[in-house]
Length: 431
Image (cartoon, rainbow, N blue to C red; front, side, top):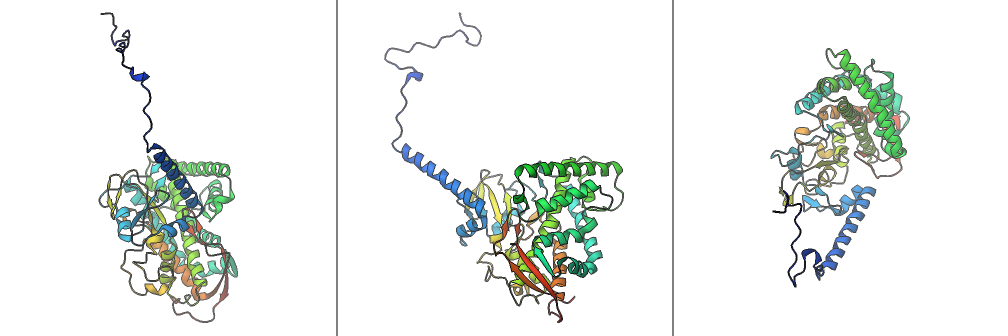
C-alpha cells in the first residue's frame, strides 16, 4: 500500500493543469462596504470607551441624562441594560420564573455566592434577632450617645458611621475577641467603610491591608470553631461561624462578616446622614414623624442604589429582549424618582408618607427572596436616632455641596451638623 496507518506518508495530490491549489488562490477582494463597516465598528468602540469613561466619572449624571420615563428597560451608551420601571425591577429581583442567575447581593463574595440557601437564612435570622435585642436594650442610651458624640458640632457622613459603630458595641465583636482582630476591624471602618476612604490609599496599600484583615478574621474564626460555641451568639461573627456550619471555608465566612460590617456601620450610618442632611436643608420638616423622614430620605437617596443581575435565558423584559450576554442593573435610585409613580419625585416631602403608599416604586432594601434580612431592625434604629435628634435638638447644617459621594453605596456629601438644645416640644418627635 505504501501508506502507514493514519496516512503519514501520503503526499498531497498534484493540482490539475490550469487549476490553482487552494492555498495558492489569491485573496478575495474586500467587499465594497467593508471600509464603511470597519469605520462604523471603530466608531462604536470609541463611543463605548467614552461612555465607560463618563460612567466612571459621574454614574448618576450619565443615568439622569439617558433616563427616559417612557421606557422601563433601556440600554445605555455603556452597553448596560438599566431597569427603572418598578414592575420590571420586581420581576428581575424576585426572579419568580427563574430567568436570572440566582444570586445574593449580601452573600456575594470573591469566591462566588456563599451558600447553601439554608445557611443564608439562618445567618440572616440570627443576625436580625441579635440586633433587635441590642437595639431594644440600648434604646434609652441613645440621648446620652448623641450628646457625647454629636454635640455641639459633628462632621458627616463619618460621624454617622462612628456613631453606629459605638452603638453596636459588643454586637460587632464580643469582649473575648482578640486585640488583633479588634484593631483590624477598626481599620476596615477607617479605610474602607467611610465614604471616600478607598481613594485615600493606593491599590497596593489596600491589597496589603486586606490580607492583614483576612488573616486576622480567619484566625479568629478557627479559634472560635476550636473552642465551640454554646448558647446564643455573642456577636455577628458568632452568627456567621455557627450559621455557616463546620464545613464552610473560613475565608468565605470572613467575607460574609465584612458584609455585615458594611451593611451596619456603613449603610445605616449613611442613611442617618441623609436623613439629617435633608431635614437640615429643608426648614419646616424637622417636626415630621421620624418614620416619614427616614422613608423619604431612603426614597430620594437609597444607599443600596444598583443591583446587578445576569439573565440565564433569552426572554422578554418589559418589551426588551435580554439574554445571557447582557449585563442587567436594577437602579433603585431612578425607580424611586420615577415621574409616573411619584408626585414631585425629586423633592423632599416626608408628608407624602402620612398615608400608606401602596405603589411598588420603593425598594430601599432590595426585593424578593434576597431582600435585606435586617431591613426592619435597620428602620427601627434609624427612626429612634432621628427621633432623639429632632425631638431634643435644633439642627443647623453646613456643607461643601449637594452632590452625593457615589460608590457601591450612595453616601451623603460632606457636611457639618451643629446641634442646639430645643426648649419647645416638636409635634412629630414625641415618643
